[in-house]
View 1 (cartoon, helix red, strand yellow):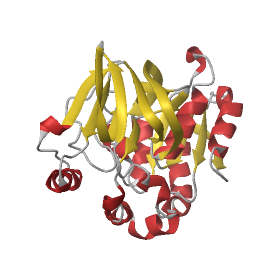
View 2 (tube, rainbow, N blue to C red; view 1 turned 30 degrees about the vertical axis):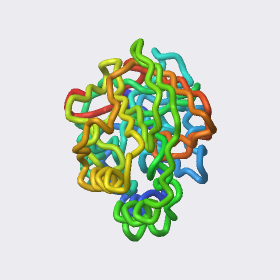
View 3 (cartoon, one colour; view 1 turned 45 degrees about the vertical axis):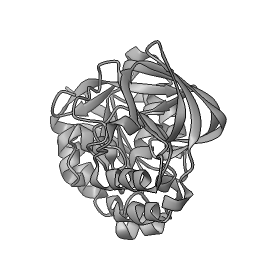
View 4 (tube, one colour; view 1 turned 180 degrees about the horizontal axis):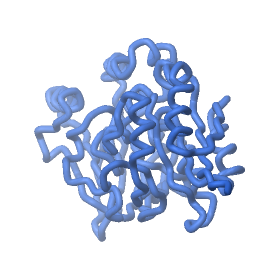
Length: 304
């Protein structure tokens, strides 16, 4: 009698973070095979290569595990969403990037072997994802101050310094902050103002900062958190906002427009660059963001 072995696709970015995942690969595979999985391993070769491979092969597997940063998880989720909901396998995540925001929210261990055990011992739980003008994002769509740091910071610098590289790169850009005039239509309210930063998020940690959104974040409640920071009135206000990013707490709440929403429409007076899960999301004058409730299942040890 031959027992069925669950088929796992393990796709990973070999250059993510400090590239340590390459040296732990055999240990990670052993953890999966000893748990009874028949594992197929695929190292990505270029941006969106992981997406293409998973999208072509997703229906052949009982579980898909990705290893890498938030961008790798984004590609994997985007690929899984290409098949009907009833055919989507649950997703496991081994974080090996420099910041790993979403992994922090999911309380996934930073130790990659522990993260593999976390997958083996965990269970699938439903999770919302976002739709940004037809593109998928897992935990944040953002524009403005410092948002380009994640994809503009050189990879070798991130490999050497980790998250500290983002802080160094951000410090160079304080004088480059420019506001955008936006019209935000959300929850029946229309807001018009100038903003230097904005995000629609589904995470307790964004850019390594855990206190900008607040603790009341549900990952499968059908709602995302909208947080927009207004243009400072003077240099002192600007300094307070910068300090707020560093200390993870914006003290002057009058400078912030925030709410929970399942849909938002945002128009800008000129083309504005957006970032989706740490990767460049294009330049837009008008965007529509919607929540796809419980669109995927993520494997975690606790309910999300």
